[in-house]
Amino acid sequence: MKTNIFRFTDIFLKLFFTKLIIARHQILGKLLNVSIWSFCTLVIFGHVMPSMGLSSSFALIQFAGVLGSAGLFENYGNIATTIMDIAGERSIGYYLTLPVRPWAVLLSTACGYATVGAFLTLAMVILGKIVLFSSLSLASIAWGKLLTIIVLGNVFYGMMALAIAGHVGEVAKIGNVWSRFVFPMWFFGGFQFSWHAIHQASELCSYAVLANPITYIMEGMRIAILGQEGHLPWLACVSALTLATILCWFLAYNRMQKRLDFV
Image (cartoon, rainbow, N blue to C red; front, top):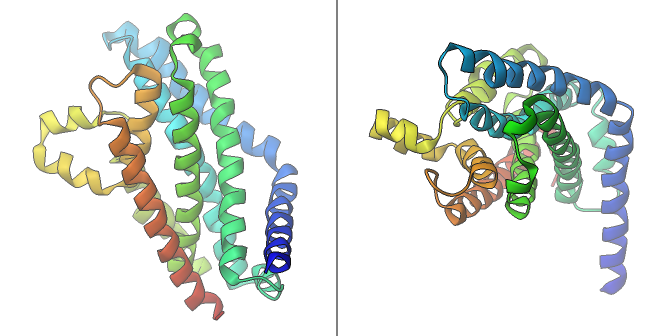
Protein backbone atom coordinates (compact mmCIF):
# COMPACT_ATOMS: atom_id res chain seq x y z
CA MET A 1 0.00 0.00 0.00
CA LYS A 2 2.77 2.40 0.97
CA THR A 3 4.70 1.47 -2.16
CA ASN A 4 1.70 2.41 -4.33
CA ILE A 5 1.33 5.72 -2.51
CA PHE A 6 5.01 6.53 -2.92
CA ARG A 7 4.90 5.59 -6.60
CA PHE A 8 1.82 7.73 -7.13
CA THR A 9 3.42 10.67 -5.32
CA ASP A 10 6.62 10.28 -7.33
CA ILE A 11 4.82 10.25 -10.68
CA PHE A 12 2.50 13.10 -9.67
CA LEU A 13 5.44 15.30 -8.63
CA LYS A 14 7.33 14.48 -11.82
CA LEU A 15 4.30 15.46 -13.89
CA PHE A 16 3.88 18.64 -11.86
CA PHE A 17 7.52 19.70 -12.17
CA THR A 18 7.49 18.84 -15.87
CA LYS A 19 4.73 21.45 -16.28
CA LEU A 20 6.83 23.98 -14.37
CA ILE A 21 9.95 23.24 -16.44
CA ILE A 22 7.97 23.80 -19.64
CA ALA A 23 6.51 27.02 -18.23
CA ARG A 24 9.96 28.19 -17.10
CA HIS A 25 11.00 28.82 -20.69
CA GLN A 26 7.95 31.06 -21.16
CA ILE A 27 7.85 32.76 -17.77
CA LEU A 28 9.57 36.00 -18.81
CA GLY A 29 7.16 36.45 -21.70
CA LYS A 30 4.20 35.70 -19.44
CA LEU A 31 5.50 38.13 -16.83
CA LEU A 32 5.97 40.84 -19.44
CA ASN A 33 2.46 40.34 -20.81
CA VAL A 34 0.69 40.62 -17.47
CA SER A 35 2.98 43.48 -16.38
CA ILE A 36 2.11 45.61 -19.42
CA TRP A 37 -1.63 45.26 -18.78
CA SER A 38 -1.25 45.80 -15.03
CA PHE A 39 1.05 48.81 -15.48
CA CYS A 40 -1.37 50.52 -17.85
CA THR A 41 -4.31 49.87 -15.53
CA LEU A 42 -2.56 51.11 -12.40
CA VAL A 43 -1.14 54.21 -14.06
CA ILE A 44 -4.54 55.25 -15.40
CA PHE A 45 -6.49 54.59 -12.20
CA GLY A 46 -3.69 55.55 -9.83
CA HIS A 47 -2.48 58.77 -11.41
CA VAL A 48 -4.66 59.91 -14.31
CA MET A 49 -8.24 59.34 -13.13
CA PRO A 50 -7.76 61.02 -9.70
CA SER A 51 -6.89 64.25 -11.55
CA MET A 52 -10.35 64.00 -13.16
CA GLY A 53 -12.18 63.74 -9.84
CA LEU A 54 -12.06 60.00 -9.15
CA SER A 55 -11.31 59.16 -5.52
CA SER A 56 -7.65 58.36 -5.00
CA SER A 57 -8.67 55.32 -2.91
CA PHE A 58 -10.07 53.73 -6.07
CA ALA A 59 -6.49 52.98 -7.10
CA LEU A 60 -6.26 50.37 -4.33
CA ILE A 61 -9.61 48.90 -5.36
CA GLN A 62 -8.24 48.59 -8.88
CA PHE A 63 -4.96 47.18 -7.58
CA ALA A 64 -6.89 44.37 -5.87
CA GLY A 65 -8.71 43.80 -9.15
CA VAL A 66 -5.39 43.49 -10.96
CA LEU A 67 -4.20 40.85 -8.47
CA GLY A 68 -7.46 38.96 -8.90
CA SER A 69 -7.15 39.08 -12.69
CA ALA A 70 -3.50 38.10 -13.23
CA GLY A 71 -4.08 34.36 -12.87
CA LEU A 72 -7.25 34.50 -14.96
CA PHE A 73 -5.54 36.16 -17.91
CA GLU A 74 -2.61 33.74 -17.63
CA ASN A 75 -5.00 30.79 -17.82
CA TYR A 76 -6.76 32.23 -20.86
CA GLY A 77 -3.62 31.27 -22.78
CA ASN A 78 -3.56 27.86 -21.08
CA ILE A 79 -7.12 27.21 -22.21
CA ALA A 80 -6.21 27.90 -25.84
CA THR A 81 -3.06 25.75 -25.58
CA THR A 82 -5.00 22.84 -24.07
CA ILE A 83 -7.70 23.03 -26.73
CA MET A 84 -5.10 22.96 -29.50
CA ASP A 85 -3.38 20.00 -27.86
CA ILE A 86 -6.65 18.05 -27.54
CA ALA A 87 -7.52 18.75 -31.17
CA GLY A 88 -3.98 18.22 -32.47
CA GLU A 89 -0.94 16.40 -31.10
CA ARG A 90 -2.67 15.18 -27.92
CA SER A 91 0.53 15.17 -25.91
CA ILE A 92 -1.69 14.89 -22.84
CA GLY A 93 -2.59 11.44 -24.16
CA TYR A 94 1.00 10.33 -23.51
CA TYR A 95 0.77 11.31 -19.85
CA LEU A 96 -2.46 9.33 -19.58
CA THR A 97 -0.56 6.16 -20.55
CA LEU A 98 1.62 6.40 -17.45
CA PRO A 99 0.88 4.07 -14.51
CA VAL A 100 -1.15 6.65 -12.63
CA ARG A 101 -4.81 7.56 -12.46
CA PRO A 102 -6.05 9.98 -15.16
CA TRP A 103 -7.27 12.36 -12.48
CA ALA A 104 -3.68 12.67 -11.22
CA VAL A 105 -2.53 13.78 -14.69
CA LEU A 106 -5.27 16.42 -14.85
CA LEU A 107 -4.66 17.52 -11.27
CA SER A 108 -0.92 17.95 -11.88
CA THR A 109 -1.74 20.07 -14.93
CA ALA A 110 -4.13 22.29 -12.98
CA CYS A 111 -1.59 22.64 -10.15
CA GLY A 112 1.08 23.62 -12.66
CA TYR A 113 -1.20 26.29 -14.08
CA ALA A 114 -2.03 27.49 -10.56
CA THR A 115 1.63 27.75 -9.53
CA VAL A 116 2.56 29.92 -12.51
CA GLY A 117 -0.55 32.06 -11.97
CA ALA A 118 0.30 32.54 -8.28
CA PHE A 119 3.86 33.58 -9.16
CA LEU A 120 2.61 36.18 -11.64
CA THR A 121 0.09 37.48 -9.10
CA LEU A 122 2.79 37.94 -6.45
CA ALA A 123 4.96 39.71 -8.99
CA MET A 124 2.13 42.20 -9.55
CA VAL A 125 2.31 43.14 -5.85
CA ILE A 126 5.83 44.44 -6.48
CA LEU A 127 4.73 46.23 -9.63
CA GLY A 128 1.81 47.77 -7.75
CA LYS A 129 4.11 49.18 -5.09
CA ILE A 130 6.38 50.67 -7.76
CA VAL A 131 3.52 52.30 -9.67
CA LEU A 132 1.35 53.43 -6.75
CA PHE A 133 4.23 54.55 -4.51
CA SER A 134 3.00 55.77 -1.12
CA SER A 135 -0.64 55.07 -2.01
CA LEU A 136 0.04 51.39 -1.33
CA SER A 137 1.37 50.47 2.11
CA LEU A 138 2.77 46.96 2.15
CA ALA A 139 2.64 47.02 5.96
CA SER A 140 -1.14 47.41 5.92
CA ILE A 141 -1.70 44.30 3.80
CA ALA A 142 -3.01 41.21 5.62
CA TRP A 143 -0.41 38.91 4.10
CA GLY A 144 -1.88 35.69 5.44
CA LYS A 145 -5.21 36.44 3.81
CA LEU A 146 -3.56 37.68 0.64
CA LEU A 147 -1.50 34.52 0.20
CA THR A 148 -4.54 32.37 0.99
CA ILE A 149 -6.74 34.02 -1.63
CA ILE A 150 -3.91 34.01 -4.19
CA VAL A 151 -3.50 30.24 -3.77
CA LEU A 152 -7.23 29.47 -3.73
CA GLY A 153 -7.94 31.83 -6.63
CA ASN A 154 -5.25 30.43 -8.87
CA VAL A 155 -6.16 26.82 -8.09
CA PHE A 156 -9.69 27.68 -9.17
CA TYR A 157 -8.39 29.31 -12.37
CA GLY A 158 -6.34 26.18 -13.10
CA MET A 159 -9.40 23.97 -12.70
CA MET A 160 -11.48 26.39 -14.74
CA ALA A 161 -8.94 26.27 -17.57
CA LEU A 162 -9.35 22.50 -17.88
CA ALA A 163 -13.14 22.69 -17.59
CA ILE A 164 -13.48 25.32 -20.32
CA ALA A 165 -10.95 23.59 -22.58
CA GLY A 166 -12.82 20.32 -22.20
CA HIS A 167 -16.13 22.02 -22.94
CA VAL A 168 -14.97 23.94 -26.03
CA GLY A 169 -12.68 21.23 -27.39
CA GLU A 170 -12.33 22.53 -30.98
CA VAL A 171 -9.72 24.96 -32.32
CA ALA A 172 -12.35 26.70 -34.46
CA LYS A 173 -14.22 27.62 -31.28
CA ILE A 174 -11.29 29.12 -29.35
CA GLY A 175 -12.76 32.58 -29.97
CA ASN A 176 -15.72 31.54 -27.81
CA VAL A 177 -13.47 31.20 -24.76
CA TRP A 178 -13.03 34.95 -24.26
CA SER A 179 -16.46 36.16 -25.34
CA ARG A 180 -18.58 33.47 -23.68
CA PHE A 181 -16.58 32.55 -20.58
CA VAL A 182 -13.58 34.65 -19.52
CA PHE A 183 -14.82 38.18 -20.22
CA PRO A 184 -18.34 37.86 -18.72
CA MET A 185 -17.03 36.16 -15.57
CA TRP A 186 -14.23 38.70 -15.18
CA PHE A 187 -16.23 41.84 -15.95
CA PHE A 188 -19.14 40.89 -13.68
CA GLY A 189 -16.82 39.40 -11.08
CA GLY A 190 -16.03 42.71 -9.43
CA PHE A 191 -12.89 43.87 -11.24
CA GLN A 192 -14.05 47.50 -10.98
CA PHE A 193 -16.57 47.34 -8.17
CA SER A 194 -17.20 45.74 -4.80
CA TRP A 195 -20.15 43.48 -4.10
CA HIS A 196 -21.72 46.09 -1.82
CA ALA A 197 -21.46 48.68 -4.61
CA ILE A 198 -23.45 46.55 -7.04
CA HIS A 199 -25.83 45.61 -4.23
CA GLN A 200 -26.67 49.29 -3.75
CA ALA A 201 -27.23 49.71 -7.49
CA SER A 202 -29.29 46.53 -8.03
CA GLU A 203 -30.09 43.85 -5.48
CA LEU A 204 -31.04 41.41 -8.23
CA CYS A 205 -27.68 41.80 -9.97
CA SER A 206 -25.81 41.57 -6.67
CA TYR A 207 -27.38 38.22 -5.85
CA ALA A 208 -26.73 36.99 -9.39
CA VAL A 209 -22.99 37.74 -9.21
CA LEU A 210 -22.76 35.59 -6.07
CA ALA A 211 -22.94 32.63 -8.46
CA ASN A 212 -19.70 33.87 -10.06
CA PRO A 213 -16.61 32.45 -8.25
CA ILE A 214 -14.47 35.37 -9.42
CA THR A 215 -16.60 37.61 -7.19
CA TYR A 216 -15.12 35.87 -4.15
CA ILE A 217 -11.58 36.16 -5.50
CA MET A 218 -11.94 39.91 -6.00
CA GLU A 219 -13.63 40.40 -2.63
CA GLY A 220 -10.95 38.32 -0.93
CA MET A 221 -8.19 40.39 -2.53
CA ARG A 222 -9.81 43.62 -1.35
CA ILE A 223 -10.28 42.30 2.18
CA ALA A 224 -6.56 41.49 2.32
CA ILE A 225 -5.55 44.92 1.00
CA LEU A 226 -8.27 47.27 2.29
CA GLY A 227 -9.73 45.43 5.27
CA GLN A 228 -13.00 43.67 5.97
CA GLU A 229 -15.31 46.72 6.08
CA GLY A 230 -17.52 47.10 3.01
CA HIS A 231 -16.87 43.61 1.66
CA LEU A 232 -18.33 40.12 1.84
CA PRO A 233 -17.30 38.13 4.94
CA TRP A 234 -13.84 36.62 4.61
CA LEU A 235 -14.97 33.15 5.65
CA ALA A 236 -17.80 33.26 3.11
CA CYS A 237 -15.30 34.13 0.34
CA VAL A 238 -12.95 31.28 1.27
CA SER A 239 -15.77 28.75 1.69
CA ALA A 240 -17.59 29.67 -1.53
CA LEU A 241 -14.35 29.68 -3.54
CA THR A 242 -13.33 26.29 -2.15
CA LEU A 243 -16.73 24.82 -3.04
CA ALA A 244 -16.57 26.37 -6.53
CA THR A 245 -13.11 24.86 -7.05
CA ILE A 246 -14.30 21.38 -6.07
CA LEU A 247 -17.32 21.64 -8.37
CA CYS A 248 -15.14 22.96 -11.20
CA TRP A 249 -12.77 20.02 -10.72
CA PHE A 250 -15.55 17.48 -11.17
CA LEU A 251 -16.79 19.37 -14.23
CA ALA A 252 -13.26 19.49 -15.67
CA TYR A 253 -12.74 15.76 -15.10
CA ASN A 254 -16.08 14.89 -16.68
CA ARG A 255 -15.45 17.05 -19.74
CA MET A 256 -11.90 15.79 -20.21
CA GLN A 257 -13.03 12.19 -19.81
CA LYS A 258 -15.41 12.64 -22.72
CA ARG A 259 -12.85 14.46 -24.85
CA LEU A 260 -9.93 12.10 -24.20
CA ASP A 261 -11.92 8.90 -23.73
CA PHE A 262 -10.07 7.62 -20.68
CA VAL A 263 -11.51 5.31 -18.04
